[in-house]
Structures are given as C-alpha cells and as structure tokens.
Image (cartoon, rainbow, N blue to C red; front, side, top):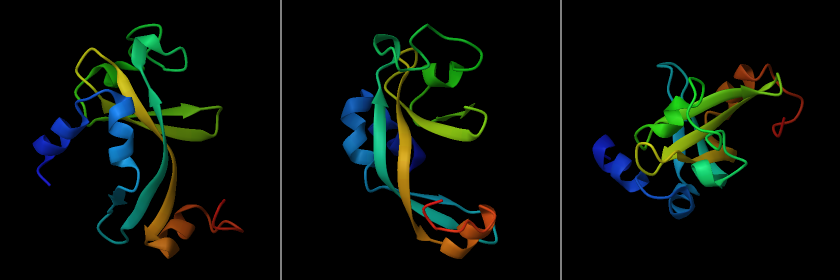
Length: 124
C-alpha cells in the first residue's frame, strides 16, 4: 500500500485507529531473515487529555515524535529493560498514539528465537 495512503488512514484519533491495527502485520526485514508479527493487542493514548500518555505534560525532546505526523513510530526504553513502540495517530500537534502491546509471530519464528537469545519458551 502507498505510504501516503497508510498515513491518511492513521490521521484520526487513536481510539478510532485501534481496530484498524488489530490483526495487521508488521515485518522486520534485515535482508536475510524477515520476521512478521500480527498485532494482537494495542492501547490507545489520547495525548494531552490522557495522564497515561507521554504527551500529557507537553512536548519534550524525548516525546517530540508523538507530536508529529501520523504513521511514525515513537519508541522508548522503559523500566531499564523494555522497548515500547507507539504508532503515532491523529494530526501534527495532537500527540495521540497506539502502544503496540502484544503480537503473535506468524513468520520467521526461528529467526525471532535466535534474536531473543533462544528463550526457553516462545512466550518469553
């Protein structure tokens, strides 16, 4: 799909975009071993109206991506161990986004296992 069209589909409040992302697939292709994940859970953040949002207290250098154009990914490190990713939705300056909370690997399972250091269980 045309990237401009994809951004247009995301240029709405996060709560309206959430159902569109559920079941969507994301692929990371490093040129050798692509891994595809189907999104199974998202969480909507409503920017300055939402105390749970990184945008609640206004724009900073850290969260500036959330205030930008729909379709960008705001990634941050939390609790010293996890990377979180938010798909930016809405309009520039609005700072709504969808946290990608969970997904199911549907392609490249072996590559994903290797990248995770061969976890004991797939859910790990």
